[in-house]
Image (cartoon, rainbow, N blue to C red; front, side, top):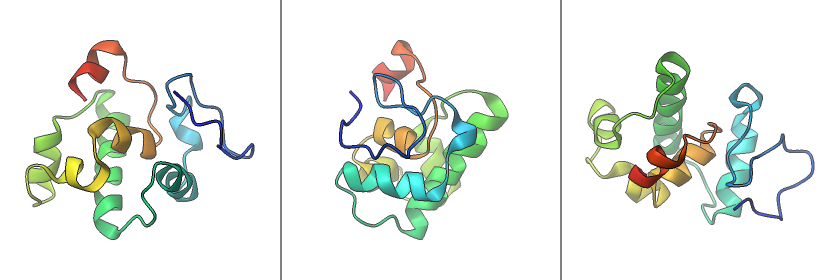
Length: 107
């Protein structure tokens, strides 16, 4: 569910908390979502994962295999879970739209 504490200046989110239009995403929006989710500081490593997720989605229109993300970025294969607690949270912070019920079950 979307956090009701989201500032009104943020672009629209759906009922599951995903940004409706990924083109409206900014690093500031990512930082705001992360802080609301309990991640106080997004590091360069966080942003490398976020950038990879955004690039993959904008190029292929799909959710990548998270272990592949970590291996490509030369990180531990569980880097997404370690940095964001879950792939779903990383996807939300990356400002990507709702991937659908089936994809969310894999996240």
